Length: 220
Ligand code: B12
Image (cartoon, rainbow, N blue to C red):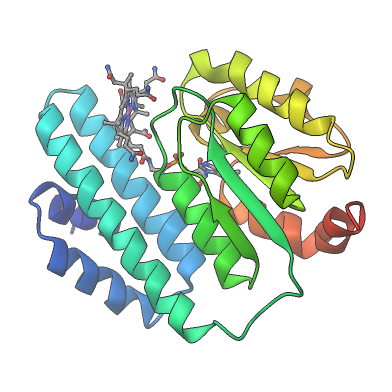
C-alpha cells in the first residue's frame, strides 16, 4: 500500500480538496497536529516536488497541489483556533516572514499554526518581504521571536542579511532561520546566542520544550 503522504499528494494533485480535508481530519483523531504537518503534509509536498522534477506532473498540476495544500493547512488551523482560543500564553509574540523574492510559504504557514496552538500572538507576513518593510513592522510590534523562511540556495545572502539586521534590534528577539535551505545546507555559521537554525517543526518543538523560557526571558 502507498504511504499516507503519497495518498495525500494524490488527492492534492487530483484537486480533491474535500477528500483531502477529510483525510487529514481522520488522522487528527489519532495524531497531534505536529505529526500531520511534519510527517504527512510536508512529505506530501516534497513528493509533489519529486514528481515535478521528474516530469511526471506538469507545472499546472503542481500549482493545483499547492493550492489544495494551502486550503488544507488553513482548515487545520481553523480547527485549533476554535478549540484553543483560551490558551493565551501571556502575550508572547512571534512574527514570521519569507525573505525578499522567496515564494515558498507553506512551511512558514505551518509555523504560524504551531505558534497559534501554543497560544502565542502570531503575525504571519507571508513570503517575499523586502527588508526595510520587515524592519518597520518589527519595530512597531516588537516580537519576542522572528522567524525567517527560505527554500532556495540563492536566498542564502538574503537570509544572512535579514538575520544580521534583526540581530541588531535593541530588545534582542530570538531569530529562527527555517525552510528548505536548512535541510540542504550547513548553516552553522549563522548560529549565534540569539540565532537558531531550525530544520523542521519537531526541532522547533524541542527548542521550545528545552529552552522556551530562555528564549522569551532575554526580550523582557
Ligand atoms: C510548491 C512549490 C512551489 C510553489 C510555492 C508556492 C507556495 N505557496 O509555497 C511555487 C510554484 C511558487 C514554486 C516556485 C518555484 N520553485 Co518550488 N517547489 C515547491 C515544492 C513542490 C513544495 C514546497 C513546499 O511547500 N514544501 C512543503 C513545506 C511545508 O516544506 P518546507 O518549506 O521545507 O517547510 C518545512 C520546514 O522547512 C519548516 N519551515 C519552513 N519555513 C520555516 C520557517 C521557520 C522560522 C521555521 C522554524 C521552520 C520553517 O516547516 C516545514 C515543516 O517542517 C518544492 C519541493 C520541495 N522539495 O520542497 C519545490 C522546490 C522547492 N521548488 C523548486 C524550484 C526550482 C522553484 C522555482 C525556481 C521554479 C521556477 N523555475 O520558477 C520557483 C522559485 C520561486 C521563488 N521565487 O521562490 C525546486 C528547488 C530546487 C533547488 N535547486 O533548490 C524544488 C525542490 C522542486 C524540485 N524538486 O525541483 N515552488
